[in-house]
Image 1 (cartoon, rainbow, N blue to C red):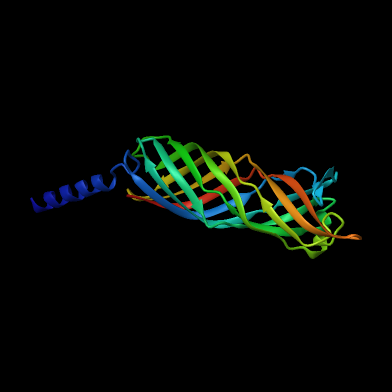
Image 2: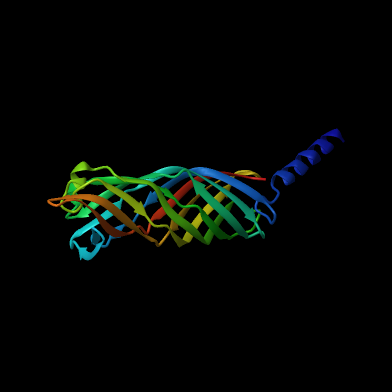
Length: 241
């Protein structure tokens, strides 16, 4: 009798441990590694004005791009139903190199900036809640902005394109997020996963220069439109409450 009771208890425990990990009203958190891969290009560098006078002069064959970067990421999610979840993704702002392209490619790295891109994503999970493997598709929105942007290449600062001390700023932009991925549940609470996101977005970098000329120092404003369009991977481990 005692043996039967013990076996029944083990069976009950097994049933409890196999309870649905992915179900409505379930919260979860993840942490992992984001890898940003900009599929970048840019419009030519353009001088907007010099000493307050409109110039609107483009330099064909010039451009700027952004390198790849990695950072630690976090997310907080909630299952609205057994299959539909909403998730907020955050990360420590990664530092990106700003690189010259085209005729500016000879300068290599011309500056750097930190990227902020919190995202809100709605995800639809396939398979039954009790399954271990859960592929999903997602659609969301992110806000792209940069901080601590600066020109670091002295040769570029002294070039004919700039010609003096230069500060750089970028605009911010909202953009859609297209997301696919999967989770694999090891237990009722613990899981691991991988996702790939595509974000079609462009930003405008504005260069404000105190240009040295034969008549003295004059202000110059230039800009370059950079098409980021990054692919973002997220390798993660998570816990469901």
